Image (tube, rainbow, N blue to C red; front, side):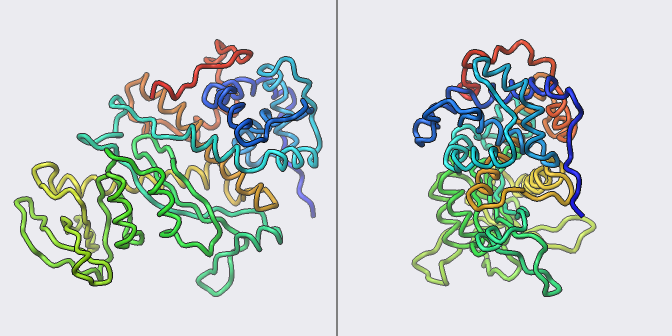
Length: 404
């Protein structure tokens, strides 16, 4: 039995014009226009649904994952007309939306994500920095996509413990997260045949910077990946597997010790690391961490052990994507490889929009962004945010990232 497509209330469109205004503040029209020109995706003629509008639509549809595509466009018409007053916008059919998205392709959305989604925390952001370091975490996850033959072929399905495959094809995602703001930056996606470690190389190479303190779980450690991360000039605090051999070479004043790691046991590749081993009260699990911060006077073992558990911020962030934004049991709905990838970047941009708003609100209130409700923010953006009515979307706005 076919299910009834979810819709929004009649007359809802006018309440969503504010959300579109926010989109244009955070992702300025001038930035979008320049990206479309550089990727040769700028509309050669002004269609009913030109490329610049499609960019904003792809982000908007990820804010309304449970609503059918045409209904999202209907409810955004008045907002789009408010921003593009000279354009004649029509509620095209499902095939028209698909054609417009196919014309746009992946590259403009990918470039918009890479240009705009960056760490946004400042020294005023509670929980973003510790001493001189910006705290970030590396991790991976998977996202379900529509169960179509083209998606099954392109991405594959994950095998289950009982021997049966998962009900949906999936994409693999690896990203860095700014712990204090939950901004997912440097994200990459691929099919399930590519491991997290391989994808992590791309993420670290492009997005890990000096001044960051990067946490990673034990499944990510490998000598080659560690060396790559070191080459980016960042400080590292990674967990090691229980079977790893870390011989004591020098005991330090704070209880940590110096050791060496090797590439396949070759002594010529020796890399000095500092080792912190501890357990948590009430648990029998032992944590074994290594870091390239060798001086205990710079930061103690106790401080590092406490900081490492900030890594769980990325688990919470992925939950925001997979549960709160998508909704339970909702998958990415695109039916082809390119549109899945396009939708993925739309989802990441939509998540950044929400986290950017939450960060700005936290700064004004002098609060920790973690104390603000992600779900509430999502619902407010979906409904209306009257404070943004002062924005004039008929003009290009100043790029909000210039002051970061």
